[in-house]
Amino acid sequence: MKFDKIEMILSNMGLGFEDGKILIFFLFALCRVSVDNSSCHNCTLIKFDSVNKPGILLEVVQILTDLDFIITKAYISSDGGWFMDVFHVTDQHGKKITDDKTIDLIEKALGPKSQSKEGVKSWTGKRVGVHSVGDHIAIELIGRDRPGLLSEISAVLASLHFNVVVAEVWTHNRRIACVLYVNDGTRKAVDDPKRLSLVEEQLNNILRGCEDGDKVASRTSLSMSFTHIDRRLHQMLFADRDYESSGVTTTESECPPSFWPKIAIECCEEKGYSVVSVRCKDRAKLMFDIVCTLTDMQYVVSHATISSDKPYASQEYFIRHMDGCTLDTEGEKERVIKCIEAAIQRRVSEGVSLELCAKDRVGLLSEVTRILRENGLTVCRAGISTRGEQALNVFYVRDASGNSVDMKTIEALRKEIGKTMMVDVKKVPTYDKEPETKGWAKTSFFFGNLLERFLA
Image (cartoon, rainbow, N blue to C red; front, side, top):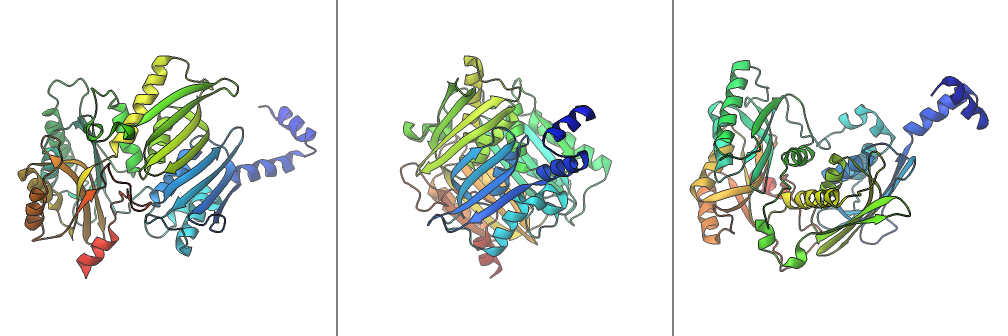
């Protein structure tokens, strides 16, 4: 826009050019967040108002999710130039957010200070979306999944003396995606080009051996940057077209049809939106997974309502494509439905989880995954983190055929692994029981209680 047009607009507002510059700066810097513990008896209300900008809904939901909050209700409105939303949240135990430090963190993350990079970087403790692990190399892997693959990947890293300090592994529709942060075991990044080239070559060889004629190629990539791991895993599997399912997933085959995701897309001609309605089994991070997928598909969420009626969740999104168009063809609607179904299923893990705590060292992950493989178990999802000198890991496991694991096998495994590390076995809530608390589906990989027991 030319300066004479800007001056004309400001003149109509009764403002001079200098006053207009101050107003524009003020509007773009303005955002307001409030944490309300008095309006609702069983949850905390987080209210956020800001100038609208691309991706702001995902940014806010991502922060709340990374703080391990459970979003029980939400009301979103961002039509036009202003973004307004209200989130009803609890902690993982279904309690209000009353800790002063946590409330201060919310205000720093979502308030005016968040507009500057220093607002986030100056936080103490866990950075939102990023694990502080010192110097590192980030390794991303995508390929065809098979039993024992994670064991082979970790064995390669251990043989080349790479220490895995943070990692997450997702599997869905016979595909596997991994993001791993590794160093040399002394919190220093590996900077030897030959060593990096060798690990990339060996990992690619393992992944290529799994393809069995697959059209989608496997790949390994290395970088020095941090990324939001969950967001990156969604992007990797979406690009890998894991939503092109060949049939009912293992998880769906074990649950009643009433729990299968039900997704419908209708046209709201009066307002010019496509309305995406989702009803499925409720769990933690569900809203983040759906909003992340819609954003990556280049759709803009203008309005949304989220509610939880345990054990179900109902979510409704009013969306347009970034060019302002709605979903006009049946093919486009079907693709969105498949992608949302995939986003919901990637994080679902029914059955048994193993939570392990041990002193961190090079080769620990390789040792644990080797024992799992030797006992006929396959890892369908995993999270690895490091706190100080302690490694905190979780593995969601099934047998080699993808079925639930016999508890006798788990008990034998617990005795074997328990000789050198703290082990906690948990049965992930099944479909025939409603959750006991609102925090039933917590999948965070920071096990405070387990660590305290280990250090006791």
